[in-house]
Length: 306
Ligand SMILES: *Cc1c(COP(=O)(O)O)cnc(C)c1O
Image (tube, rainbow, N blue to C red; front, side, top):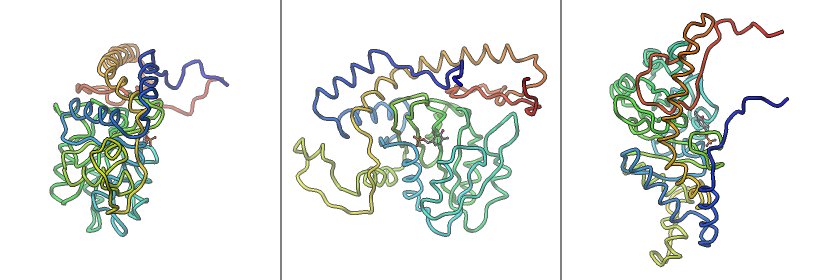
């Protein structure tokens, strides 16, 4: 069966085609100047010190675990309502995910009151997911984290440019991660970004993203470096310049796309407001958000159309 309503419509035009063509013509297609341009755009648009392009958000979350020193025997609190990757990353490093329920049907984000109850001497971090693009109550999360000396990882895949009290999501905790999978607000096919204000985390993410090598091919090709050393157990979690060049175009469209989404959400809120059978999560949200998803909850979801 083909759906009448598409899962996601790519916001692609001639600009993306041109950007890819130019990158191919430049003869540098792996991690290079386009990845750097995309990272710089993130730093500017998110007002954050460090941005590191990566192969996808799952790898970004994996690096977030390693660089926040989470490992075997540790516990990490994560939401029970999320995508698999924000839980799997905890297991990649041998730690144990501890599931925390959401606040309720009108707020589908992790419940800070429950988070605090789940803390044990083994707890090292909290993974928050800004569901559908709407902010987790970060004041409460950061207060709890500070009190118990926990790291905070913001899986911000749904929430590029979403805000919480004037701060961009992904910049409030220790580290934030984004995905550029095809159906996300910024689409490059596969890809992602790590952002942080922590220099130590940023440096190690950059190192581990490329085999733990002290220099990259592009730096050597440009004569900026002549040798490299391998100083850590690294991975290949790099983005490439073909996809980064699409990302640069996508980033430039992002704000206007989100403003359109805001208008569409208003339309839905108005159209659904008198319908008794539905709950609209985050209905009262007043923050600027990405509106990645427009969730609705059916009060009686067992009713099937005949
Ligand atoms: C899409 C998504 C991911 C995974 O991103 P990839 O780039 O596909 O690895 C992780 N967390 C959430 C909440 C997502 O929506």
